[in-house]
Length: 116
Length: 114
Image 1: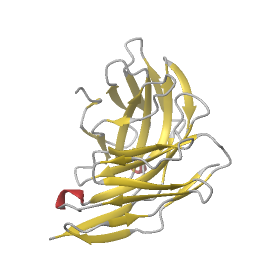
Image 2 (image 1 turned 90 degrees about the vertical axis):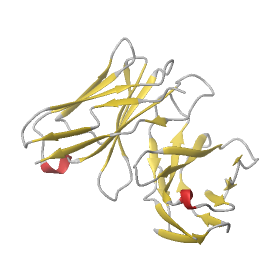
Image 3 (image 1 turned 120 degrees about the horizontal axis):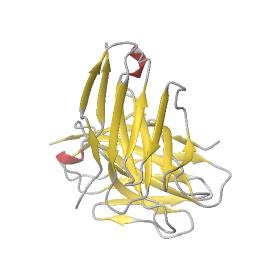
């Protein structure tokens, strides 16, 4: 079974600084997808960024970028120029590509606080 | 852009009662997922449907059942409610076709069992 591990329960960053959230996963599959979701206090789950395992190029979405190391099974999220609105719980998630409708498997999450 | 709609947003039930949660996916999305998130926990997958057929199954109690209808909306039926069922229930939707794999979440239904 696949597992996702986020080893940092809490992280903090100052406005305008850069922070990196860690995520590792375990799988025997070769084809899968990885995601980072943001959950602010409203508890809405917001998709931040996604990565296809077959792509070597790291995904980037504005201030958010990932460092995807397939051999090491590592998928970290870098937030540049941090803003107060980035404060939230961040979940790393794995999804198998083996069939349609497969579930997201989440890590335990990292709470990010941003100070001014 | 249209998002996933869930109703009701809040629900209070007593132990042993029944609850029905509804989910309306993003237009043209054919796959629906249900997740349960307890306080301070990560979302746990319950069940999913693709083209009205059950696609994947997670840790869904036998007291719960779900289905996807011809218009692609889905309902999660929960019977004999227990205190431990109090949680935030998310519905997510996606396009099940090749190359479309992102799941978009609704705002959730907060269920409180007293």
